[in-house]
Every structure is written in structure tokens, then in C-alpha cells.
Image (cartoon, protein in one colour):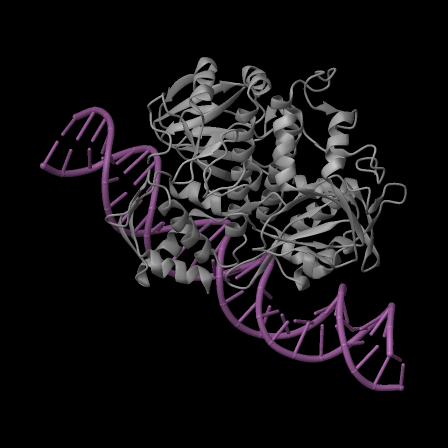
Length: 253
Length: 253
DNA sequence: CGACCACTTGAGCTCGCTCAAGACTAGTGG
DNA sequence: CCACTAGTCTTGAGCGAGCTCAAGTGGTCG
């Protein structure tokens, strides 16, 4: 994973797609606009980085540690440097929905209503985060509009991710959701080894079920079916070898 | 509907929730930050409005008219003034997902990838839109950072809407989704008469089904069940009287 | 009046949920 | 070293919500 190294001298924020608002892409970035590197990741300018580092704190968290709870007062934004974070939402009826997984480079903590967090955030693995106080950030925005532009791009990126998730969850057949989930994970260098096509699942079956809107039993059964059909191979419950081509074909039909 | 009147001298953008990034709410808005009116709607400053009107065009569309297609080059952002817009996404497998309905005051057209629209937009009713060219908007952002701030707030608002939709669709029982959908519509002055508690559905059953991830038959049956239970009353297929209290109770259980 | 469209209702089947038991791993203590 | 426990994952059996296919209803327009 090259986006968001632990090196504080270079903070990268993932911006997988393009946003016309950010100016032309694929061409030389505007000197005055946010800059995008070759891999499509957003790179904040050195000056902005310095400004950010002046208000940011790096925090380290243990596997499973809560970062904030649903309903907590929202005082900080976070950027994942290392590890992964689980965003979840508790429904009135008691069910739990995993809203997103945040990977290195992702920004989270901005989804608030009435100054309180709409979702809970938990460290999924041991992880390292950059913590940005809202107040200082807003003040920085006034001095540095480009920074605000970067956050706008990041917000649009979250929106795309959210929509992808929606489309995944509304796939009628659960087996397609599971296949889609595996493909989604395969895009994360943090947990997918491209050389061996092996996926390391950092979340348990219950997280996957809550992410896909199904049950752990169904997830397990779907993995079984996919394995029968030769699309995946379970080395052990947390390590799965994928046949990306077959999985993609399944999703398209 | 007080948000987004047709009067071009006052353009309101809905920002239903609060975003700490935008500064404190419920208190006097910062003179330098985006302003939020009493009903929580974002109000652009007169100067910004003037600037926006210099680059914007008002367009009028007939019921059903396409605004843009999925995959089209994204050149404009739009704000709904009057009427409603349907955002839909065609999946590889041929299914059609309604991603959102846009109401007066909503901003849309910003969800793009590689400079092309991720979704299609169609006028659901006769409607009136403000069209903003991307390029000019970006140039305006450089001159007027507050404007960009407003768009950031609007982006966060879309994210909240998108998450609400996700939670609605993953509610296990379809009947709850339908109830939730009706309640959601009841929040739109465009189609809900608070005096008579009557909802005017501007979309057909197929749109509702595609929005909720189900089928037209199931939507119809659910409406039947809700009617049997006295929670709603179908005057005709497109006019439904709601018992808001009962519907809310159903959703919470 | 008939054609067409959107909506409703019916009947049967299937996918996925529920409840329940079994398998595997890791940690603990004798 | 082997129970014993506890946690996670897998597998099984039965049932029911919702999908599919199909027919029926009502409204609109030529």
C-alpha cells in the first residue's frame, strides 16, 4: 500500500475516482488545485501537509478498540494510516449494520448530525490513525481553500464508496453479494496478495454478514458454494484464494 | 416548500443535518462561514448568489425527460428548483437500481468517475433546474472559498441521505422498507399535504420497487397489508393517506 | 368500444433465515 | 500430554417471506 505510509512527511489521501470539480485529471494538475498522483491518490501539498501536521495527532489503537460511538459528540476527523476501521450503525430494532470498512488513506468521522456521530467506529486490526480536531481544521480551511477542496474530493469519494456498497447489498442473490465483497477486498493491498491471489480476511463472519445484510450462516454457505464451483479456495477461515476472473463473471451475469 | 423557491434572488440549498466543519449551528452563524437558516437550510450569501447566477442557467424539463445518462461526460452540476428528479444506476446484470430521488433544494450531478456520470438522471415530474458548469464553478471556488464550503456541506448531506437509504434497504422486512419509504416521502412538502396527511406519489410502482430493492408485486402487496392494518389508506394508486404515528411505530419495532 | 397501461391479486416455489448440532482452533489447568 | 472450555466457523433441516409467473381490475386514450 503506497497511499498513506506511516511517514508523516507525506500524507496521501485516496481519491480513487475523478471529480471534475477538482480540475482535469490525467493531465498535469493545476498548480492551484489539489494534486493527484499517478495512482489516482490525492496528495496534499507540502505546505498543506505542514499545516495539517501542526494540528494533527497520531494515535495508535489495539485490535477492536473503539474510536468513537454512535451518538458521541463529533470533535475529530480521522485518516487511516495503517490497519483498518469498521464503521457500524445500530438500528432502532437492534440490528447492526456495517456501513463501511475504512482502509489506509481513507478519511472518516465526518458523517455527523446535530454534532454527533451517526456511526460507531472501531479498530478492526491494530492501527495507526491521524486525528484532526474539527475546529482547527475549519480555521485551516479559511487560510487554505485548497485543503478544503481536498476534503470535498474525499467526501465525493466516500459517496461513491457508499453507492457501491448500496449496489452490492441490493444484489438479489446473496451469493453475488459475497462474491462482490471478496472482489472489493481484493482491491485492498492491505489484505490481498496479488502474487498468490490470496485474501486475508481481517473481519469475522459476523462483520461480513452485517456488511452484506445477511447472516453468518448464509455467508458461510455461500463461501461453501463458491468453493464447490471452484471460484475460491478456503485455505483456512481467514485465508481465501480467489479466482478473480470467475468471480467477476459471476457478478456480471 | 420554502427551500429553493423559483425566485433566483434567493437560492437555498438543503442541509438537513449539521456538520461541525461548517462551524457551530443553533448559534449565530459565523460571518465568515456558510450560513444556515432557522429551518436548517443552507443559505448562500448574496455575493455568492450573484456569482452563481452569473454562471448558472435555468432549465425547464418535461416529465420523464433525461437530464443525463450513466456514462455521459459530466459537465454540469444541477440544483432542483421545482419538481423532482430520479437518479438511477444500471447494473451489469441488467437490473436497475434507483439510487436517490432529488427534491427541491437538492444538488446532484456530482457523482462522477473518470469524468463521467455514475448514474442517470431523469425528470420525474415537470421540473425546473439550475445548471452549473463544472469549469466555471471550480474557478468560482478559487475566488470564493465559502462557496466551496457550501458544496462540502451539501456533499456530506448527500452522504447522510445515501446512508439512510442503505439502512432502509437493509431493513429485513420489506414491509418496513415500504413504510420507511412512505415516511421519507412524507417529509417532502412537494408531495405531502400535512393538512390532510395525504401523500401524492409522483413515481410509479416500478420506481419504488427499484428504490427499495424489491418487485412491484411485493410493493403492491405491502401497501395492501399496510392498508388492512389501518396504517394507510389508498385513495387511488397515486394518492395515499398516511397514519404517520402508526408507520413510525412499525419502523421502530 | 377495444387497446393499452399501471396496478392489484393469486398460486406455487425457492432462497435464505432460524434454530440446532457438529467441527475446528486456541487457551487453560491438571 | 490430555481433558475441558470457549469462541469461531461450518453444516443440516425445516419453514416462511418474497420472487416468479399469470390472471384479473380499473382507468385512459384513440
